[in-house]
Length: 368
Ligand SMILES: NC(=O)c1ccc[n+]([C@@H]2O[C@H](COP(=O)([O-])OP(=O)(O)OC[C@H]3O[C@@H](n4cnc5c(N)ncnc54)[C@H](O)[C@@H]3O)[C@@H](O)[C@H]2O)c1
Image 1 (cartoon, helix red, strand yellow):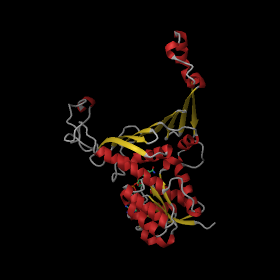
Image 2: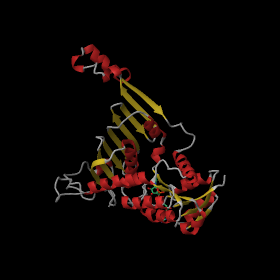
Image 3: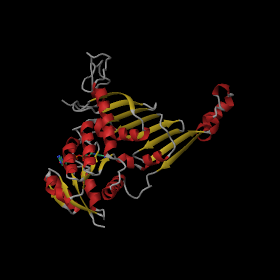
C-alpha cells in the first residue's frame, strides 16, 4: 500500500503527540510538521524523522491529509485553506471558534469531497463506547469535567476548552433537538469564563446538567446517566463503567417501604445494592492495545483512504458548537442578583458580604 502523505499543523502540547503517532504508522508518510514557532517544529521534526515548516502553504501540493492542532482561534482560517486545496482534515476540538465558522468548514468539506473529522477524543474512550453499546435511553445526564489551570487554550473559555467534550458526548447520546438552555459561569482569571454550569433540556424530555471548571484543585472527568433501564456512571480517566438496575420485583412495585416490618426494613438496608438493585462495574481500561489518540488517528487515516464518514464528522463538530454558543449566550445574560441592573454575566460579581476566611489564618501570603 502506498503510504498516505500527511502533515500536522501546530505541534504544541497535543500536535506533537499526533505527529509522534502518525510518524510510527506503517501506511502513513509524515511529510512535515508545521508550526510558526520554527524551533518548536524543528524539535518535533527531529524526533519524528521528518521535516519542519513554518507555514503549511509550503507543503500544500504534497499532502492528502492533515491534523490541525493550532490554537482554536486559528482553526477556521487554516482548515478553510487546506480544505479548499482538497486536503482531508482532522481538526482538533473545538472545530472552530463559532458555529458559523464550523458550518462554513462543513460546507467546504462537502464541496471539495474532503474528509472532515473533529478531535472529540472522548468518543474513543472505551468506557464511553461500552456505555453506547448498552440499552439505556437517557432521561437525565450529569457531566462533570474539572482540571487545574493548564496555561493553554486561553484564547477560548472553559465552554470551548473542556465542556465541548461533554456537549458532543451528550448530543451523541440524546439524539433530540435542544429545547432550551440555561447557564451561568464566572471568569476567575480575568479572561474568558473559567467555571460554567449549564442545564440543557431536549425536546424528547431528557435533561442534561453540564459542569466544567479549569480552575479546580482536583481533576475529574465523569458522566452519570439515568434512564428507565437504570443508571450508568462513566469515569473517563479510569475508563470504567458502573451500572445499576432495579431488580424485577422493584420494577413490578412488589416492595412498598410504607408497609414493611422493621426486620424487613433492616434487611433492605443491608441488601439494597446486590439483591434489590443490581450493580456491576465494567473495567474497560485494558480493552484496546492502542490508546484513544491512536485509535482516533486510525479512524482518520482509514477515512482518508476509503472516503468513509469518520466517527465524529464536521457535522457533529458544528452541532456541538451550536449548543456551546447557546450556552455562552445564556451565561452572558445570567443575572446574579435577579435583575438586569445588577451583576450580569461571567465578568461581574455581586458585592461580597465579607471574606469566607482570612488568608493569614492559613499562612497564605496574598498576591499583590
Ligand atoms: N482533544 C483533546 O482532548 C485536546 C486536548 C488539548 C488540546 N486540544 C486542542 O488542540 C488545539 C491545540 O491545543 P494545545 O494544547 O496543543 O496548544 P499549544 O498552545 O500547546 O500548541 C499550539 C501550537 O500551535 C502553534 N500555532 C500557533 N498559531 C498557529 C497557526 N496559525 N498555524 C499553525 N500552528 C500555529 C503554536 O506555535 C503552538 O506550537 C486546541 O484547539 C485545543 O483545544 C484538544
